[in-house]
Length: 356
Image 1 (cartoon, rainbow, N blue to C red):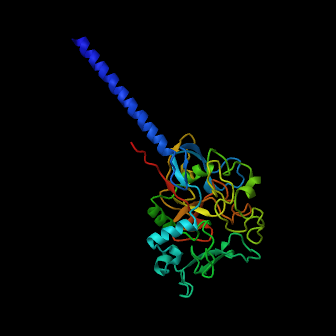
Image 2: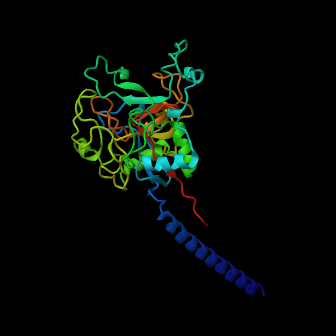
């Protein structure tokens, strides 16, 4: 009797195990099917372990990009291109959202981000607008004084990128610009997406690589073929060797190894991480692999101590080796939450929740 009971138990265990195996196989097929079905305009970035930050042979690497450290980032979907004017217009039409560059300026709020006792500008200046690149710079006295090539333009916003007299007619496939962090978040909430972390952004930019300097590899000679950047002497001479003098339509250059366009150059892309120039210093253990890092717990930038900044990645059409060389994957800068300009945009990501 005991032997028969044992046999029955054994048969039950085997049968139950086969049932679980069959379920697992079924779920596995469902998961694989889902992972291969990317939302429209997005591509899947495989989970990978890679070297984040400055690469050993990068001559342009800056202290805030060091030390390089190993991270492991789970898979996710990311937009193939930067969000375009056409896509952003659809969001505006659906929500009637008003971007920061279009809103009335609140001086009491603005002065909190400025040095103490900063005098209030005249009301004629405190009008809605944004920063645009000054295309008429003839000479520069001090390259650290970026105010020489930036101009506050009243009436500049996503619909009027160079001021009230300009428009985006015929520019549906150009990346939307003059976008601040808050604007990008509003779009993400509407689209049921989110902004990438800096680590996710680097994972996507690397494509199938794990430690290259550029999105295409390690060869700087390919820059003009691969990215929309500044050619000539910045900011006084720009020769459109790559085909575009300033902003270019998305997909104007070859994609990286997983089909992503403009991960280098064209417009800076906003991420969700706080910008802290000392954040990478916390990765002192070279043997530790950090999984899905979310960035610094708080911002820190002594050059802009009163502002809360987020990390922007990828560089823009203004990037040049003589100035910032931010067309590199590891390059990172900060942007205030309420700031936008004619070379800042964004792209979104989505995390797939597997059905079971």
